[in-house]
Image (cartoon, rainbow over all chains, first blue to last red; front, side, top):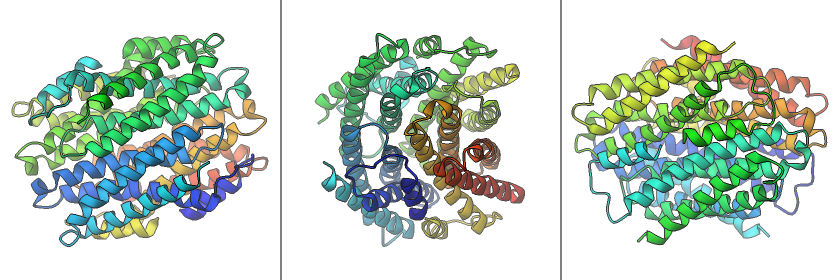
Length: 136
Length: 136
Length: 136
Length: 136
């Protein structure tokens, strides 16, 4: 998907400003991947016999999926100057990913879907932090 | 819709903790109303002859709609302890609503949809701020 | 929320065409209410001691919430001629609501949140059917 | 992203049933890619000097993005039996993608973002059709 995200950024008809396009593409891709992975992890948790022990994980997965999807959309828009909202969304996304990763890592040895999900959350958390660091 | 939101909170099978249920219901309702209003305002801006002058407004509407919808979903979940993500989402939502209201207010005299949308954004911004103030 | 939806429809700067504005407002409101209610019902199911018996209900709640939110957004847009997608979204929404209502009704006597959720789903199913019947 | 989608399907703790896992992964990936591309295409249209000529394209982009995102989420869930909603969502998604591709193709020679977006829509339309054909 990174390829597609990059291609679309390259077709943008105006100047993209000072934002690092490579980091932007990485972060958009990480947001959508994390949203999908968290949705799938919540569902895999529901399919476990021990679902009753995983309700906190499911809740954090669902919250993370919602925040990542919204952030991926905000980042996909370049028109108009909306740095304030972009920064606020990135901060919320970084937090949601950190919280979900912390939770999934506790189940990573027992549930492979939580291990994979924690990785996607950490990748997205890092991508948000890197993009935030470069925002003017 | 507030009636329905409140009814669902009352059916929740566990203790809702120390959160102010009235403010929570108000904020959930405000998030969904603001999301819908921003989506409709972006579309009404697209229908204006002077759409070229409204692209920044459309962009801020679309961002605000995404962040409000995600925040409304996060707030609708009580299971598990996810205060960190709830707070981060509320802060992002308050910012997105403030930015969109500031923009829409500039067009409020010319475009009635921007006037109504600014009101929905201000209501949601205030509801987020009130809920944040009470979060432990 | 119906009041706000209607107000925004009235501020739309072009002719809304032959669509029944009252039924349109009812359906938009029903979609957002059902999305919120299904999200809350999934979370209330997660909070039940017998969550293991409710995983199918949770899954149908989450699917219904996603489809209702998307349909509410599509219906909130009037610009451009997109009758085909509007009809397809309404048909998907009617189905998702019917399926979720059928499931929630099975738990309505035991779980008040499922009883309330089934009502919201039936209302949205009916609103979609009515709007579909009037689409040219 | 296909790699991640496939990995998560492989970690699912129960039998995935008769669905073709390769086609399922392709379709999930196509839905999220199309959602992101349509969001970016709408924004790129907003950045064009001739935005007034592209409002129908923007509207169809936004509708397609919403329907694709919802369908990608529905497809990411395997727990419980929700074939009816899955089929209905796939049909809505196929339609939304076809309508958006038809529109974007009209601007493909003038706007590279519309050309890339039309491709993503056609890919997703085809992936939905293939998955639908195999649903029992």
